[in-house]
Length: 376
Image (tube, rainbow, N blue to C red; front, side, top):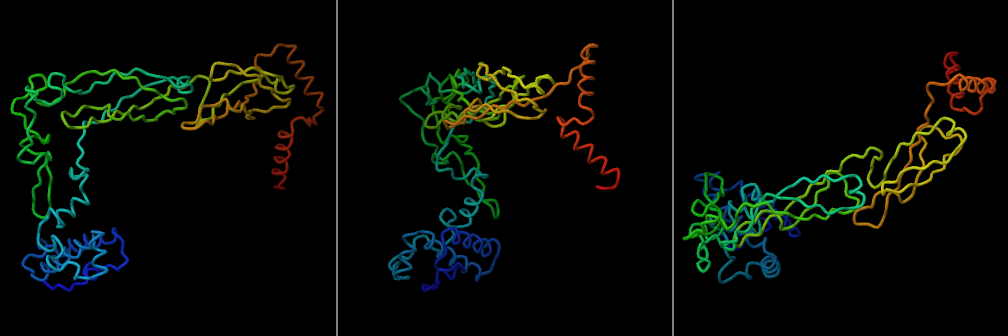
């Protein structure tokens, strides 16, 4: 192989390419020239080695800086480590697939193993969502075995051994044609450990099933569908394994009087026709259990909204408060007495057919007349 390769030209990138561009170019070219895709093609095999050699240098910031400054002289006496060859554990096609599909194939996760995450549904009232509440919840889960302190071993002085097949990784890697597939280790069943004398209570798992009771603090202002994460409160994972997390999903029950939109509260309040016409003062309920007096101006129409500042929900992670909106609904009376009918007829007659107190009605029918006469 030539020793004066221009590594940037090999990967077909510019000298100011960032790490993402270099990685993308490497993946594309390594896939293209991999020997499995080009059987018997010596030129493709040589090209593949050059690509690996170039990527091994340019992916490392220190090696790349040395190469940019001194060229190939920076690596004289040993050459760039791992360049060329087919060690798929250190820069070959296996790494390409692990980088692209690692999460789907159970690949690298920073070495962290954890117990299973759990989910639980908690229902609270509208008032509890407004004020905040602490709820006791029962969670069926797996907890650390007290008999063996989570070691899984009947003899606490003889802890589990590292699995000789996977060396503690809990998974093994196998090549299937062009792909590399990771599976749970068949020797230790994914635990990474071997127990010679299993605990008779947990049978070597280090955990047992149990109902746990937890107290969850639900903050004021929480909305329906909110999810609260309790770190480390999920299933225990056994010795040396971090517990999973518990996710609490909040369901807020509807209220017969109030509706919510974010931090704001809406309340539909019916008023009599005479109250809306003459104006009045009414008392309305507030979600905190108190009452508030609201002035209804004379001539108020259905759909008009009155605001009570700061009477809404708390805003999460803020000192702000929403508002409460009174939506007025003017109610037309039914089942009139004879005297009431006479008074309303007198009221209608008093207008003389020119009721300036109903501008919307007058304006609407004026437009209807113009429309029928072809003026609109």
